[in-house]
Length: 610
Ligand code: M6R
Image (cartoon, rainbow, N blue to C red; front, side, top):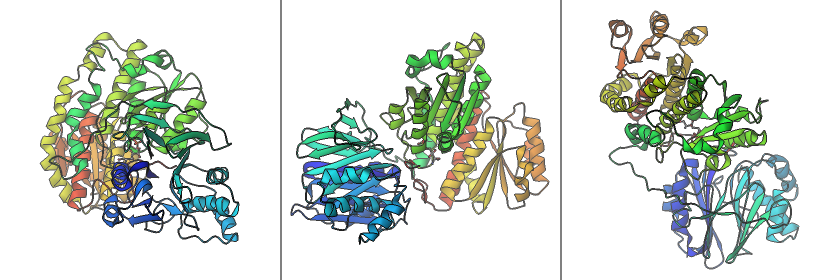
């Protein structure tokens, strides 16, 4: 799971590749490397453990014009160190490769290559692939392109790769199966990357490689070929009219903090132009609306935070439109026996639009004939391209690894989708629909949540030494509890679990003691009294109680060790307000522990391997 960027042209490679890597750092940041062909024909490879900044400082050899490949890594096979960082070279050090994906049968291939006296330097599956290409090239006496094809035909798993060979100084080959690769074309220059973000400022002419296709760039020409046989494939070039803004932290120390605060505007942006006072528009779904409206059932598939949004979406869609909804992790959906057919709608939710499991789930749904709908934040991303139709969340670039503003935007889209379905199916009265669509007052309340930030910061400091947290909520606030727990885990490294509040007594209550904080999400709704009993159950076992509520009252005040009150609003928007509180709580706990909130250990913004 990594980022690839490559350049072939006449300019110096370093700045193009380094800038590209910085754009791709969201895919992994445990090590980075760059290889280019020096002007004297020698291969120059520089790798560093750590972030792209480390690599940049190490790059002293500026003598690289014309052709180079670079990579930022999130370790799968082999520790995150300099040796395991990409690019990897074959034994002859003529062929060098960067790879995104996993070569699943690397062990038997490695064994075979070792039997042929090939020595390995790293622990990676990637080195096995480049050594196999080298084996066919050097010992099998195949030409470069043939050797690449021969090797790729023998590997199982997923790959997006770019390869160079010092014997072919004017040639670069890229190939893909499973892991996306885009080729940008500009006069006599070529840019290759795992997504278009490093390419788009150079050219808008983009060709997305399809599975089992390879791009062979030779001099100023390029051909698209099949990996499976030596045949030429069509060139489907798209003009992508999409600008990527530079991003900065503004007055904030961390992107995550900025992105939490941006929710004052982003939620409204997501909805702007999509909702009238008496109707939901969602133009992105128009072409397939008849099928969506008449579907027997809906599956929602996603990973992580986006999956939590899916759980909320299920409750909203079922409540408003009476359409059955199943929510599955994309990693499970792709292999499970699912009841998907051409009367099913599959909604895939993804901030990045590049999550490998989500893409595989979409592929499966497409193969089964379902209508696929993407809810995604990144225009031009793979989810946007692979689904039949969809809606962009439009909340701007999300840089912090912990997803925040994308989550609330996803909830916004799902809320309005539920209402649109309900209205189309005659499940909601005009008056009620109008009431739900008048969200302007509710939006103002988002701003007022931030008045509680000082208090939240104080609470964060008080509990920063806790080793475990429970997050408890009911109904739509159960996914909010899951999300609060996930936020805390990923940026503060404190163990946290989200549970339906009543389910807690079926096991997790055993963990409760005087050191353990439980965060209760308590709106004044139909489960209010029930949840009070759940709080009592924890309280009587001396657990610490933090309550997030929209109700100012004596009972809660007495029960809570710490109480955070958000403004009363539309019952459905409470989940957004409560989420923002939990995002701030996790953020301030992590900051008070002096952790890198934007790039937490072991994680990446986008998980592009299975
Ligand atoms: O880009 P996606 O929404 O598809 O990403 C899914 C998850 O990897 C992501 O939500 C992850 O759980 C976040 N780090 C959570 O903050």
